[in-house]
Length: 110
Image 1 (spheres, rainbow, N blue to C red):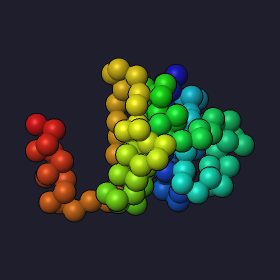
Image 2 (tube, rainbow, N blue to C red; image 1 turned 60 degrees about the horizontal axis):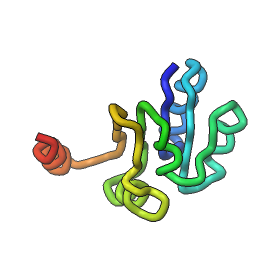
Image 3 (cartoon, one colour; image 1 turned 90 degrees about the vertical axis):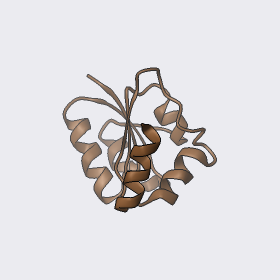
Image 4 (cartoon, rainbow, N blue to C red; image 1 turned 135 degrees about the vertical axis):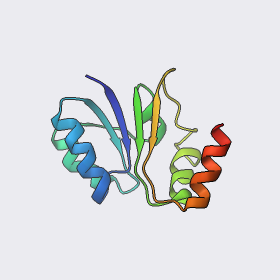
């Protein structure tokens, strides 16, 4: 199965991460509020000490955080190190953004 890192396992992210775990994927989780990752760790997910460590061996990195500021805090702040991962890793961002921000992100990616 696929090695997945899930960054942000609150109300929405926790449910999505649990489905991945139940489907048999190798799941590593990290959350700013560590206790929110406990149910997933109890169910068999690995718990990473930092977002970067969660992403290090992942084939897919999913970030499910509140907004752009939260994404920048976990990906570029202490412990984020721009979320390094293996070559060929897919990155899935699942945060709320405005249409303007979505258009800017798409333009930046070409």
